Length: 242
Image (cartoon, rainbow, N blue to C red; front, side, top):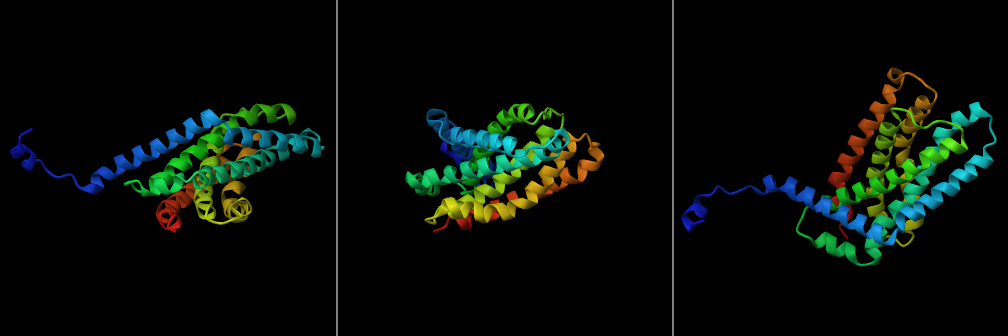
């Protein structure tokens, strides 16, 4: 290309390049986390072992009949996912901080929200893998079929919302000494607005309630996800400032 043509070439506004760079940076962070997890298998293994042990404890502790097990199985599933997910959230950014990689990621010439969306996607994938493994296990232990048509959308919305707000809270707690203790204390009260509709929607699906009656819980989950992820997108840049 000649110099004349280069000068006449219209300049691209930085805002026009931002979505592409943001997506690529977030995808690179997700790919990095997935490759690191594939090599070490630390986070998913710890989450899965914890979740399976928790389900075993709930299974033997809740000595209900079939009706009682159906009523409590949704709560047991989400309680297990929440505790296992909190374990994974604490390790996602905490590992970057301990290894000195977080400062390097923050110094890269991309929007810092790319780090948030990358970590959000990674945490969502890890929790989703644990949830998919737990469904057949809970179906056997609780004698309740979790293979219903709308169980997966309920899990996706609930896990996405929990990972969205959890990633933001985890980024706030990594600079504290007792982050393992502080993270669940800060996260669980905020996450109640996600857990309550998720449990209600899952329980209604297991009990065979028509979808029209459960639509309010799905709408609440979707609205909460949008609010939390939008707030996290706006606040993340300030949260990671030292």
